[in-house]
Amino acid sequence: MSGVTQTGRMGRLRNRVGTGRAYASLVRRVAYGTAGGVALVSLVVSVGLESHRTTLWAGVVGIVGVVVSLPSRQLRSLVLAVVAGFVALFVPDAIFLWPVVSVLVFASVAEDLALPWRGWLGGLAGALGSVYVAQPDPSVAPFLAVLLGGSLGNLLRSRLRASELVRVTEELRGQALWHEQRRSVARELHDIVGHHVTAMVVTAEAGQYGDPRAALREIGEQGRTALGQLDALVVHLRDPDSELPDTAPPRLADIDELLAATLRVQGVAVDVQVDPDPGLDEQGVLAAYRIVQEALTNVARHAGAAHVWVQVVRAGERVRVRVSDDGVGPPPTSGHGAGLIGIEERVAALGGTWQVRERPGGGTVVDVWVPVP
Image (cartoon, rainbow, N blue to C red):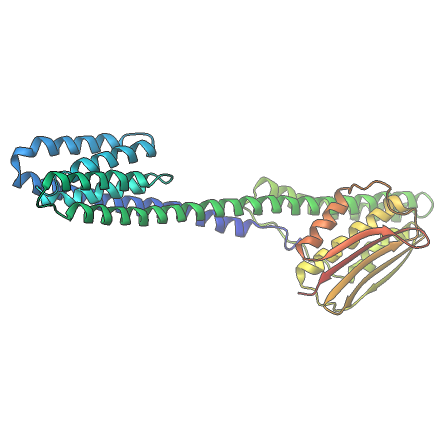
């Protein structure tokens, strides 16, 4: 079952998502903490120099404190922008207040991920108002404060949005891996149950006309093998974070030795042609084995064939997996059952192509082409 589980990758993705959240939270706390410290120092200095405005700046601090408690980022951004414009009006007379304007514009721009222009608009409105109030000797400090604060706010905002996009991307990737894992387990479960149960039924039917003791021994062996593989899958489904225990990986030689044996018990002639080294990696070998397994299971269950031909051969830069029979032919309906869906998913994972068609002279052909890694 090598290649089925994705738990290692999913665990790493979850760790990366958690790290991304912690990093974004740390960046926000550090940025806001630094900005708050700068604003506090600026207010203390300004109050010390302009003691008659103590009540005014205490009110500003109180308003900002109320803003922090607002539940909506949009509301926080709006109030911070208004306060930034208000404070900017006094910068020409209290030059030590310009860091406060920067901090307020910075926080307003960074808070609202949808409409960052509020901070810019509020700060610039206050800066223009200061020009009017301070005539004929206006100061450029309000404009510099707005420019600095807005630029830093945009930088933090972009950083936080990028972290959020990365986090969402990683979560979506983790969900996709989770779904792929479940599909992989479903394919393995179908292949295990379908093949072994079919083999047990065929062996039981053959035992009625042959050696019942030998048939019972074979059925017991098939049942034990199926139960062992099913137990591993069930344990994995109950605890997706656990690694799926691997059984011995199948070999392409097992197609003739194991898979074809079920049909031969039924009296079906099976010709197997397998290249000793078609160039497939472990994942490709498993996929080719499972595709042949599903095709032969379908032949045993539905085809009523007397002869089956199996090919796993290399042709240039591709490997051809072909299973054909002389039975009743493909089903008339266009829909695919779970087995053919499993074949389709395996082929898609390898970047190959496949088709099910009627065999000339009667029967069915499952034809798969996959690229050599």
